[in-house]
Length: 352
Image (cartoon, rainbow, N blue to C red):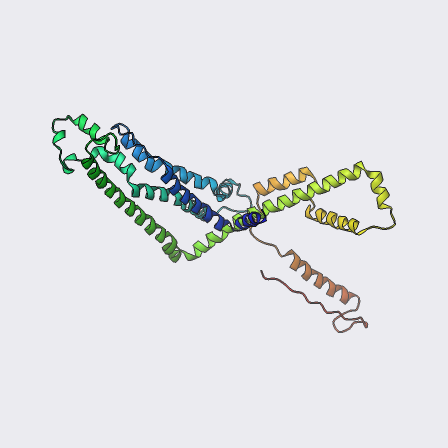
């Protein structure tokens, strides 16, 4: 159980690897579903084309939509697109990059399904068997006396082994259509591979700076949302702990006062106090439901601008300047101290 938990935490921390794994699983699932799928051509002129083309198009559309459903970045994209502008402007290039990234991953499983279907050739045979010229596939003397409607009905039964009597003509026609289907499959794979090459290799060469910028800020939006959710979870957990603790304090006030006036405290009491202080710190000064609702509403309607402040550094600099001014006023000017023990301070600033 611990191994599965560690694996799940690793996948959560590596969103890109997780989504690539999902795409791979969907691609394998599409191929497995096709192999387990029982192909049953209706062998009727009215329905052959609809069934064959529908089998080639409908499942890829379903896999494409499923890829959007399983991708967590869809909600991030929709939230970023619909949010109020506030203090942070929207960048269309970032939204376009996120949408293209989601679309590329969602297209993997449909591409696998189309490739496997074309390589197999059954749907192609079902859809286009009525368009064959039966004169090219052996002895066709038995069709001379048939009307055009009867010929079409006969050709529609070619995909069905049990309904077509002339097996030699059926085998020849099936091989002919499957050959065309496999050629279309290889052309489809070549086109998809070449398109992927253009997207992956050529695009960064022309707009490398813009590509890095959009990639960075798209990752930032995803990480910001995750950290905001984690902070909200921690705050909710601490809020619940403090609320329950205060409730039990109010209910059992006398016993709490009795234990509080004891002369000595054990180590468990010290640990409880430390935990209580840590929970109080995690509340970040927000201790009421209305305040928390206001914070969440402000985060949605007006996200902070992407410009970090240097409050801590400025505060230290101001403190140093105030100390020198106070020292000068009391006579402690540089080099003129009244035998005060000197202390050395080392201040380290992080540039990260």
